[in-house]
Image (cartoon, rainbow, N blue to C red; front, side):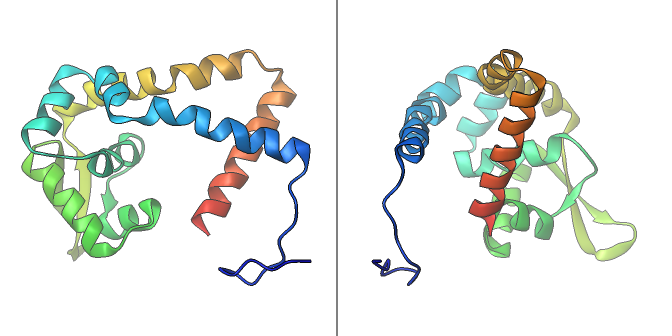
Length: 163
C-alpha cells in the first residue's frame, strides 16, 4: 500500500462509485463563481458589497448571522475556520459598509457581538433563498429516506472538512 506524502496515511485506489461522486463536485463550482453569485444578489446588498470592496470572504460571514443570536468574532472565526484577526478584518469591513452591527456584550464587556443590520436582513434572506433554490428543488425530488441520507452525508462531509 502506498502512503501519501502529506499525511503519511495509506492511499488507495478510489472505487468507481467514489469516482462518480468526486466527479460531481467540480460541476457545482460554476454556481459558486463571482458572476453567478453577483447576479443572484439583491441590488442593495450587491451595491454595498461592491462600493466597499467587499469580497466573497466577507459574504461568507453573513449567512452565519442570519439565524440565531448575535455572534462573537471568535465564534465567526471558528465557524469559518479562519484566524481571529481575519475574522475581525472581515467583520470590520462589513461594519464599515453598514451591513453588520457591532455591540458590546452586556454579559461580558470585553466581548463584541456581531449582528446583521436590520436593513440588510430582507435582501440577505432573498439572496439565501435564491442561492439555495436548486438544492431545495433537488431535495424536494427525494423521498424522506433519501433526503435524510443526503443531509447526513453532507453533514459528515462538512465535519470532515472542518476537522
